Length: 233
Figure (cartoon, helix red, strand yellow):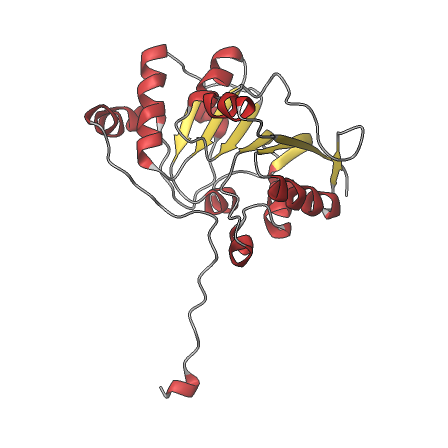
């Protein structure tokens, strides 16, 4: 095949870069021993969430749970709700698995792959009561804005996965990203802003205040929460 006949290989722009970091012995043990109990492998088969959790319950998906502290707190505070967390960085996954074991939490399952692939291939349509995206990478340089996960195509994917009345809750400490989120969500078909002023909401009690956020408050940093609800398009 001549060079002129070759087609370029187009890779999807991802919203994250894997920064593995070093696993502690405890985190490695968690990945070895606890993943089979609480982890879900990535494949192209839709998940049977009722079978995975062993019950019928409200379902919350959190994308990018970091070290898992806030996800663990939410699961402890809401034992009647099931939580599915996605995180690509293995030290954070290992940390959450250790805490799940220590606290005896049973209503969390964990996945460690690109959230877009998981949503497309494994999350059934109209199966989620809430999707959470807290403090995603803002990709603050203009040339990297295309890497931001909140984009029109991503939002329409979430629309398919949320139940009617389901909510997409975002939070960021970057004002420009908050403005980007607001612009994308306001233009998205099938969603309404629950804010009385059609912009941001106060942090709801359902989102725990993290140590990172508390430190930011002390330094005078702002945090913006946005919640949009799925409606009939």
